[in-house]
Length: 207
Length: 207
DNA sequence: AATAAATTATCACGCCCGTGATAAAAAAGA
DNA sequence: TCTTTTTTATCACGGGCGTGATAATTTATT
Image (cartoon, rainbow over all chains, first blue to last red; front, side, top):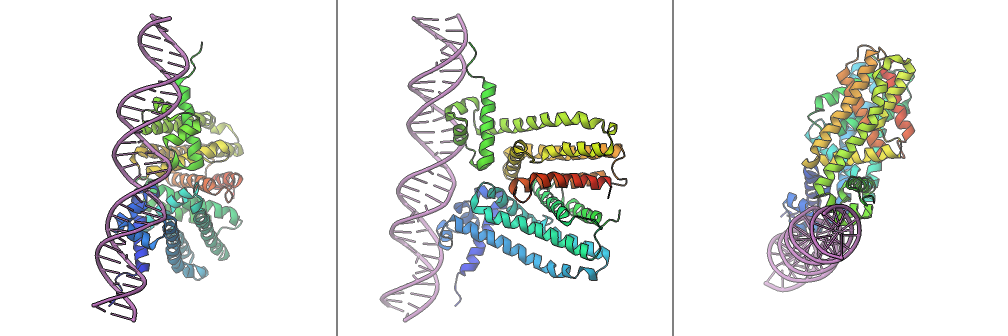
């Protein structure tokens, strides 16, 4: 006879419900009651698995980071030996890697949306400060890594200041994500990916 | 005997207080009571000049847009006849123009912060939808205008897709603003302005 | 000075919130 | 079966919110 409830699975369900509420109504309206309703649970059940609201949020933030790491891991190996591929393939891989941070499909859209809301909240709520700092440095590190790889294989145009280009690429990624989430009608997924790719092409100088 | 209270001035005072609360505590905590406290007024007084919360928000949004327009107007004439200036001056003017959208000093920082919070709220609250749409298109139009001017004077590198470059520049501006507001320790004002300038230099091809 | 209008100040209502406390029900272990 | 633990379900409290209603006070007008 299997255990009828798996605590870990329950926690994941609740966090998924939290994410849905955040995407639909905003972090601000993600109250314990709303999350419980979304999960189809009584608020008492939710509170049994999360001592208080902060614990739920902490768990959710960790889940966010874990899932993103998971998806990035697949790309990491492919980009490690970038020199094995032809130039065009290199750019394709690099763009695909960075595009994990862009809301190009429903899953990524939900992720980026949640990240944006949490980061916005972090500006005035210290409870989210650690997450915000980490996501910011993670994006930066990812951008830098890609640029470094392209530079090592000689694909990048020479004479580029990597630190500067990292800031530019990071800002571009953040801006594309923000624009695509807030105004999907103006900045659609295709344009979004195209701008990123064009930027990389530009850095590698075929124009 | 002068009127002791000027209704328009009062409204401006209240809106200024609202902006301070939003910058300090976030839009979410900008309740009528909090704003009244910040303005040093009784909530009854605030409600005498704004029938309800929505009216206050509408007034605040309009004030935001008006003030930004005001500041941009000064730049508009200078950039109109861009061809009169030498190439380096052209880039300086263009960067200065666009930098009005970056949080490079306390005033702009406050402005961008408020804009970000309102736009984030607009994602899930229809009451802010009109503002969000307008700010998005305004930024885009500003970016496009600058690129068009640079193109007309032959400063821009040839063969550029203006629509594409507009998206790229818009995203860069949004991303720089977001990064500088959320993580001023990582992305300081100097770097922020530098990246923008470097991007324009890049577009005009001196590298 | 008397009246009208504008402004400031309170009170109360219903709503949603997080949370402590506790009971009820279900499952697991003996 | 009986007991223990886990899980689910309620209740109540204090707090903040927007807002309707109304009083109190101050300023302007006649």
